[in-house]
Image 1 (tube, rainbow, N blue to C red):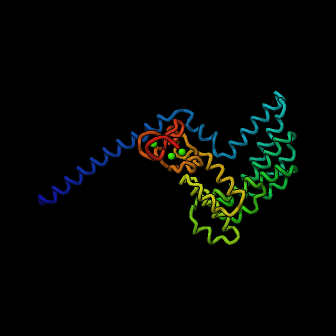
Image 2: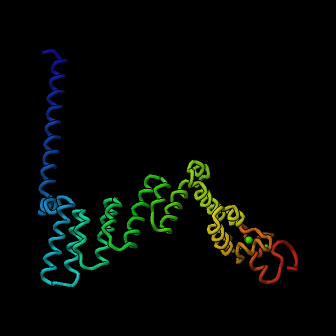
Image 3: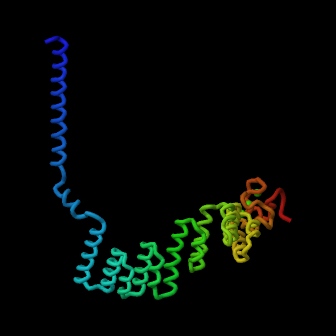
Length: 269
Ligand SMILES: [Ca+2]
Ligand SMILES: [Ca+2]
Ligand SMILES: [Ca+2]
């Protein structure tokens, strides 16, 4: 045999031995890992196979607890749990307690994200709340102000408009809205007014009620926390965004209260 061939064979044998040792080491480690598993490991996996079955087990537990103790409203609890688990809104009808029944219907309608389920409500106000919640969510999901129009409750409808416009906060977005353009612009003006602490933005709001509430609310606010409300800042000609309008280290509000001019030297006239 040639010298080179011997070296190659020696090398290959060496590599084979090294590989064998490494594999043996790895195998024993794997084995140990399995042996070191806690005894109940397999059981835990068996007990919580998936949420649905886990929930059913919870319902069964509640049922037997109910049968034992017979507490008031206990049957309702089981009915609601089952209705929610099966997403069967009609099953809520069996719930005895009126409030619990209403909650059951609205909860399932929300989970289904389906306003038709709200029709099961016998109480008009409950139905409207249910519709408002679902349509509001749908409008926010689709960023579509037109969906807000179908929201029955006025305050829900307004907050629906607000949340969509606030997200955009861009007057250009309003321009594409057709009949909702003014409503959109009014919200943007209100935001701007509060951002700047400046009631003159409120003055441009086209809807009279919104205009008044913007001015009143903002006027009563002290945007720069200097002890002077925004409407008083307007009265004294001070800056509603600067707590010390004349820069003499005394706050606008403190100066007015002590009878000093918040806009310069000397006393207030
Ligand atoms: Ca102020
Ligand atoms: Ca000020
Ligand atoms: Ca000052």
